[in-house]
Amino acid sequence: MSVTAVVKKNTYFDSVSLMSISTKANGLDGVKQAFVAMGTEMNKEVLNNLGLLAAELREAGNGDLMIVVEGGSDTVLEEIEALLVRKAPAAGESAVTYRTIAAAKQGEPGANLAVIAVNGAYAGREARKALENDLNVMLFSDNVPVGEEVALKRLAHDKGLLMMGPDCGTAIINNVALCFGNAVRPGTVGIVAASGTGAQEVSVRVHSLGGGISQLIGTGGRDLSEEVGGIMMIDGIRALAADPGTEVIILVSKPPAPSVERKVLAEIATAGKPVVVYFIGGSEEAVTSAGGTFARSSLDAARLAVSPDAEITPLPAPSRAFTPEQRFIRGLFCGGTLCDESMYALLNAGADVWSNIQKNPERRLGAGSPSVGHTFLDFGDDDFTNGRPHPMIDPSLRLARLVEEARDPQVAAIVMDFILGFGAHEDPVGVTLPAIEEAKRVAAEAGRHLEIVGYVLGTDLDAPVLADQVAALEAAGVTVTRSSTETGQYAREIARKAQNA
Image (cartoon, rainbow, N blue to C red; front, side, top):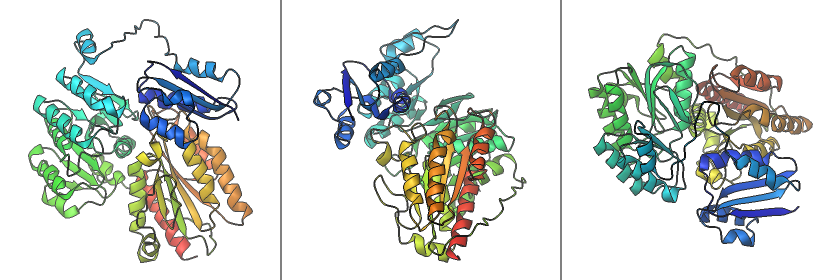
């Protein structure tokens, strides 16, 4: 199959735009694989590993755009070029391009926030420029050195600004969702989160329970590490404590470093507002001793903040039979916190299931690693996104893995998430249905029932329509759960049933 490679000199696109363009390019007729990315050494290394690094690409610089296409028609490059053309502004709107952050600030003096999505090698420099121009920052870029992150957050703290990120994918500021986010009603619940999909899940659950969001402040995934010390989460708590529109605060994170957890929890006593803490695998004693309310799950966090007396009717227990060989759960996730929440639910399933999890102590594996026992894969992890779009935009790696897992006679169930909202794939369920049908066919031909569990993270205000996505999954024979928490609980019940088959 022919490979076409083109370098467009001095042509820059941000990583968010290129993620979307690459996904659309891979959907063009006859295209086996398309790669549209900046000419960084990391991206060239990815192409080299794929056997697609043509000679002309080796000389591409960081400011050059690379277009590589395997397959496709004679007009495929023209079609990709069309994707690169920015849409014209709508009637009554104007489009202004600024070459520097300082020029943008001068041209838009009322602006107070910059969203930065450039190569990690330059991201810290641009974030510092934004802070020096008195702009709050949401830094979408990753691969920023941790020392640079600390310096940026200290500068922001000294200037009374927010420094969200690096690797911050979700925020809602004054009812405006930034990067990945969901359409939720405004309200009085404020969220500070060191997790993108964890923040999305809690905000969606708040919405589903009738509440709304005042502000959602992302911190970036490393904020509660020993090195960073929770600078942004502490500043976020203080910002929400001072916000008259916020009545209750929710903190969301994967397990923080113990010393950082103590610093963060110490802020609860002075917040002057109720604080609900959902740290996956966290200590209830530590939270309650600090004056906070401990949440055992994302759903519990939302419930405690909005409607503590709300009753959640559980799904019926799984009823289909498994063969004696089918004993394991495989989780294929786009969201890291959604992956972890399901994994931790399985950890609490009891000694019979735990004995098998111990055979795979890492549990969350990297790209190329074979599944062993109960395995949970976060396709948004750096191992999978190095040089590729996030799976919320391009799910191709996960689709291939779904069929691969279905061929394993030891697999009883495959658990998946589907994330709606701004920036995500326009039809995450629709693009996955062919792989679901193939996975079920593979298992059926081998005489096995394969349970597929799906959770659609979204609200009734999101596009595509939440109800339509759920209906499509149910029509394909997928068991659809109603929250990330329920997804983990249902997977736990399947594991118990499989162990007793």
